[in-house]
Image (cartoon, rainbow, N blue to C red; front, side, top):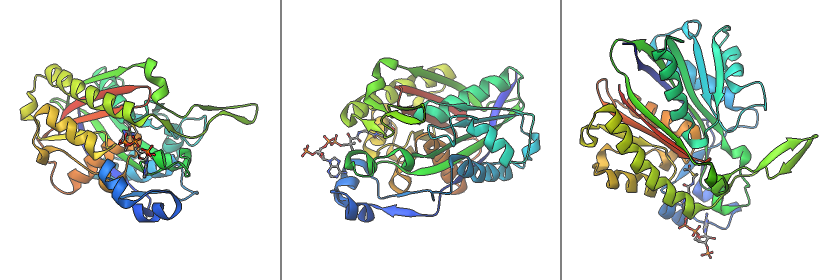
Length: 319
Ligand code: ACO
């Protein structure tokens, strides 16, 4: 049987850091409130000249370097993003061009904060079905562009960034199992309910969120998907070395680890210094812990996404 395995990781954060203190000069908020409710201390914000494909390019170069793989050897590019450069073509096609290659399949996945897990599961399936041998799977976002910077309830929560992995065919796993879910009846609790029509914005171009509903649903589905993917993989929860849930809020992350009975030191937390980077959050966190030498070859890692749609999912991988 053909398996797929993560053979390299990379990430990129735009250099500009915006602290809670800086935000509290423009908004009726405080460092104490933001840290207490979310655990966030700072976020990175892209320069107006940087699009999702630019952040994706840097993260991809680093992942390719780490894997020792040339861009020309990649036969599938999947970019998870809710903040694409354009309506079309896809950010994956723009990334392919920026990498200086052509010919391989390239597509975007739109599952908001679950996007990376959706993209990983898709690439894993395509490798197992022999449609690709080496895939570049990226999460890249510029959420700063879809925030109402006068709304303290949402502006403090998000940041920009990108993370990438190279997934390669091999004879042992790798990606043991993935589970993906959605509940479109919850579309209203987290959305950017706008569109471009006839040259005008119809609806709202800004993120809207019912925070308490999102919080409750996120904790519930993260717990359910963790158990479901562990069963599908035939791996006990207590045997997982690292849990990387979507980095939305420290309170959501800690509640998830607690419900799973996983000790705090196996929980990966980066939301304190990245804030919520949506589809980029999981690969960013993975790369940070790989480069710090904490996540090592052979470790069992659970990756979890949850976000607008409502969408959620999980993958269990051996590094
Ligand atoms: N600074 C100061 N006060 C604030 C701020 C802020 N930035 N934001 C809201 N408040 C105020 C509210 O106006 C309200 O004031 P009031 O009582 O006078 O009306 C008070 O704080 C409490 O507001 P709540 O919304 O009830 O606060 P809550 O404890 O629910 O925390 C939060 C809000 C942090 C958004 C929380 O609901 C949450 O984390 N939800 C999960 C949402 C999330 O993580 N979303 C990310 C995207 S979803 C995803 O990625 C899965």
